[in-house]
Each structure stands twice: as C-alpha cells, then as structure tokens.
Amino acid sequence: MTEETKPTPGPRRSAAQAAPDGTDEAAAASTPASAEDVDAHADGAPTVEGDGNDAAAQPAVDRVESSPIDVVTVTDAQDRTSADSLSALTSLSVPVDLNAVPPAPSQPPAGWLASHPLAAPAGDAPEAASSVPEPTEVPLEVFAPTTEIEPGYQPRGSEPVSEAVADDEPAPALSERRARAEGPEPATSLTSDRLVEKTAAPPVSGWRRWLYFTTFGYVNLGDSDAVRTQRALEHRIAVRLGDRTRYVPVLSRKGGVGKTTVTTLLGMALADLREDRVIAMDANPDRGTLSDRNPGRASQTARQLVKDRFDVNSFAQLSTYTAREGSRLDVLASDADPMVAHAFNDADYRAVTDILGRYYSIVLTDSGTGMVHSVMQGTLEKADAVVLVSGGSVDEARLASETLSWLEAHGRDDLVRKAIVAINLAAGDGTRVDVDEIEDHFRSRVRHVVRIPHDRHLAEGSQIEFAKLRGATRAAAVELAALVVDELTED
Image: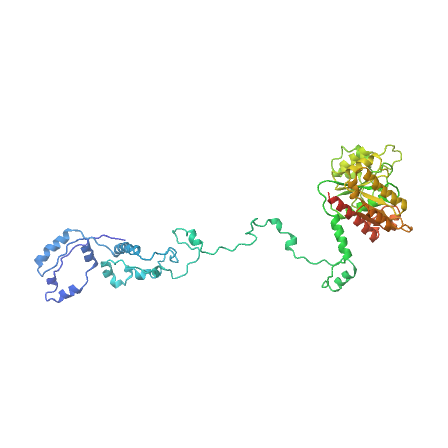
C-alpha cells in the first residue's frame, strides 16, 4: 500500500560543513543515496550540492521546502518494477507453453522468484529499487513446473484445454458389447441359461442311476438312449401350435376297431405333455362310448351345449359341460338317453366346435362310422389332420384302406397325405394275421403308421387310466401324439 507523507524539512548540512577536514566528504561520497533521495531525483526535485558555504546552501533548502515531497514506498517500487518486467516476458524468443502452469494457482513456477529482480536479499533492496532491470531472455525451463501435472488439471480462471490437446490422451477403454453397432445389451439378455452354471442331471432309472448315487454323484453317465428318445418325443409334443385351434378327427368305417380307445389314448398323451388345453368330443350321431372310457362324469352333454351356446361366455361356464377326472383331458360326451330321436347333425357339430375353439388349442373328434352322414361333412372341412384306425384282422384293415380311397375320391388328398394310421391290437394279437404286412400296405399310402400293442388294461373295455398301461402301450400313445403334432405344425 502506498502512503504519501510530508515530513518536516530540516536544515541540511553542506559538504563543507559535514567534513571540514575532508574526511566526512569521502564517507559521504561513498555512502549510497537513500530511497527518498532517489525518488526525489526521479520526480524532478532539484538537487543542491554544498560547496562549504552555509549561505550558499540556505537558499537551496528554502527551495526544497517550498515544494512537496512524494515518498514512494517499496510496495510502489515493486508494482512499477513488476509492470516493467512484463515487457521482458513479451520479448521471449521461445513461446511459453500454456500447459506449463504451477501445481497450485497460489504458487508461482519453480525458479521464478529467484530470477525476479525484487527477489534479491534485503540488504540490496535500495540498489535494486534504484535500477530498472533490463529486458533479458528468460529460458523456457524457468517456467516449467517442478512437479508432474495430473491429466485433466485446469488452473483456476484459465480457459479449458482445446480438443487438439485432448486428442493426445488415450481414449478410455470401452466394452466390446457396448461398442457394438446395435447398441448395449437389453435387460432381457440376462437369463438364467446364460448366468447360472449348469450341472448334469442324474439318470432317471436303471443301473446308471444306481451308479450315480453309489459314487455320491462323482460318476454320472447320463440317461440311456431310450430315455433320451422319449424326452425328444415329449419335446415335440409340447411345441406351440400358433394362435388358432387345431381339429383332429379320428376316423373308421367299421365299428369295434378301437376308435374310441385310440381317441382316449391320444387325448391323454397330448393333455399330459402339453401346457395348453386339449378336449375330446363325441360326435357320434348315435350313442357314443367316449365318456365311458374316460374317468369322470358330466351332467351336461354336447346337445345341451348347443342349446345354451349363446349363454356360454367364459371357460368357467364351459367347464360345467365337460368332464375331467384323473387326467388333464377334457371330455364332451354325447347323449346316452335312448329316448332322444334327433341325431347329432352337421349344424350341431359346427356350433359346438365354434365354442370349443375359443378356449382349447386342440379338439379331438371321435367320429361315427358313417362317412356319408351329415356330421362328417363339417368334421372333414375343419380337419387339420386325421387319424385312421385299423384293427388287426383282414376286414378291419381292408375297410381302413377303403376310407383312404373315399377321401381321395372326394377331393381330400391333403388329408390323405397327412393321415396317420393306428393299428390297434389292444384287444388281442393271438391271431395268425401278419400285422407286418398290414403295416407295409399302409406305409405305401401314408407316411406314418403306429402299432398299439396288446394291453390287458385296454382289453377290459372300462375306464382308462394312463398310469396303469404297459410301458410299450404308453410309448405308442406318446409316439402317436408326437406324429399328430408334427403334422399340425407343418401348416
């Protein structure tokens, strides 16, 4: 801070008075001038030199007293000198690097104070103040920081670093999946199959399962080929079929060949292995036996559903007309009342199937024996695939083959190509008929033939329980269901 004072002037001795013998004159000559005197000279104040006469010195003192004296402190001298030193910075031959900044805004660069003219020792302050430093060329190393500057550092009040300087820095590493053209992965990609470590399941049966538990799980040979084949069939059955209902009629031109039995086995296999709904309806114009082969009883029939079709608006209401007990297969029975004189016709069948198509994925139809009956027209028009049932006798096989000929004659070659022939030997296979020849005959006309072996539980003619069947019979039913689903998925 600069202070201006006006000291009271006093008498000044001349050189002659101060050193009459010449001794003080030499000392005065060697003594440096004070800061006030230098400032006085700098401001233009007159200087009076004594010649040994007091009279000559007195007028000079009067002249000094008549003009005010400006006293400049060391702070003013520093400000002036610092202002003058800026010209030295502008005359540098090497441009100053903008990045060469001190590590902290409040500290000057290392070596700057040592080169500054005001950084001299305290004893030399008057001499430094009296002389103005000449512009000199400062080396670039003087402004270089002594400590390494951290990346991204920006001094307070300075301009941001340009992009050209930032390009020299290495770009941060990005994930390969994040740098994909299609963008980051969605949250749905985090599935259990991807994140959870999988372990092999133990065998389901046989000596492989015994070995697995005997070795406490260290030896796992997996399932046998038969088990793997069975799982493949189950997977084929459980496949989705789309957004519309599929209709599969079971046909036969002769009664007593096991058409209702095959319908029940097929329906149970589909219902047990699929997640959607499957129903089997009895479309026999006369008395049908589908409800007799299936567990459970319903108080309503297909004919009653036709009468109430405009009142059924939910699956809960429809379930009162169907029967389900001991199986996931729903069954819609036909009339068993012998007093009913009106047969189930084509209009009734279409009305019922329209309602069932709202709530079921697969509708199996246990058709009657009359191919020329009116109900058969609607059955074949809605059919997506057909199952043709043949017995193990000569006449049963011949009638089944004639059914294929009838379909071809009536323009349903598409159903013949997709037809599946089921040779039912459930009632007994002790005859001398060569069943292999029957299979070869049908394989020449259709793509798939399934043989259902003899089973004592099926030969009883009572309610069928899928768990009581022999393993070979259950395997045949599952194979038949897989073939039917394969034909339905080809649409």
